[in-house]
Image (cartoon, rainbow, N blue to C red; front, side, top):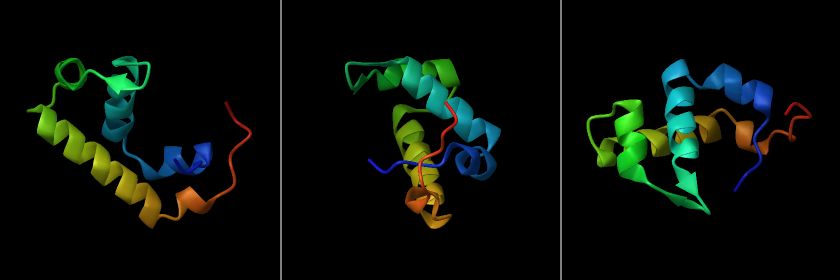
Length: 75
């Protein structure tokens, strides 16, 4: 997985995209995501829409060249 610069990611992603990532993170254990729980917590229409939106957020980061930025020193 690419390393993303924290400050640039904060600028590029919308608040909704950040919330979606938080829901996914909080419902992931040992690298396995409980997509149904993440979808429910976030309030997405379906698991598929949750996954598609996450992929779109990743594409957005890649298009902004954030993936090539040096890793941030921020936590």
